Image 1 (cartoon, rainbow, N blue to C red):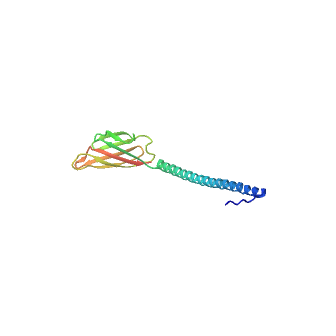
Image 2 (tube, rainbow, N blue to C red):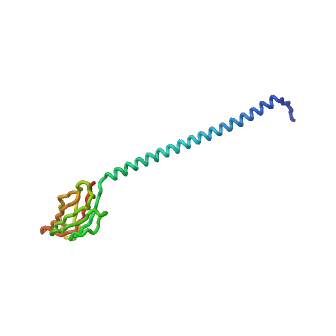
Image 3 (cartoon, one colour):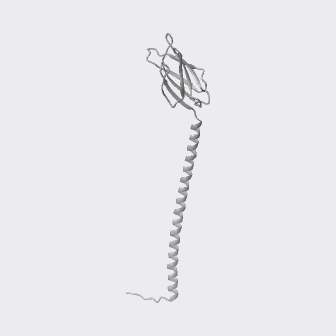
Amino acid sequence: MTIHLPITPRVKTALLGAVAASVLCGGALAHAQSTAAATASDTLIGSALNTLGNAVTALRNDVAILQMSERVARATITGTGTVTAQTGAWIRQVEHPSPGNYVLRFAPGVFGAAPTCVATPNANEPVAPAIECYGVTTTTMACQATGSGGPINTGLFVLCAGS
């Protein structure tokens, strides 16, 4: 069974207005949701850029600290005073004026202040010689190797740290 109701032009206009209003409201709601999503996306992107900026700043600070930190230099020297290995070229020359005596000359500008240095023997003797280094400046250092019978020629491992 079908019921026919007369629809007046006024009702038709009101219904069309309601449909148009709901379409507009739906569009506005979709736009609002899209805008909210875009705003949230912008917020996330802004937050990520801020985090990245902080990381870059921290990295720059770390690099500055490393640039200010001490330089560590290593070398291996034979019993005759020949440098067989070194980090970079920080030792310019090794003089070996007498048994057990070594004078290391550093390359200019390697150390701005007198470095702290240690030397250990690189030897095959049954009793390792004692090595004493002294007179360290920004350009030179003297080392004396002594075995059980006095001064002894021995290989050296040298490690210096300084700015």
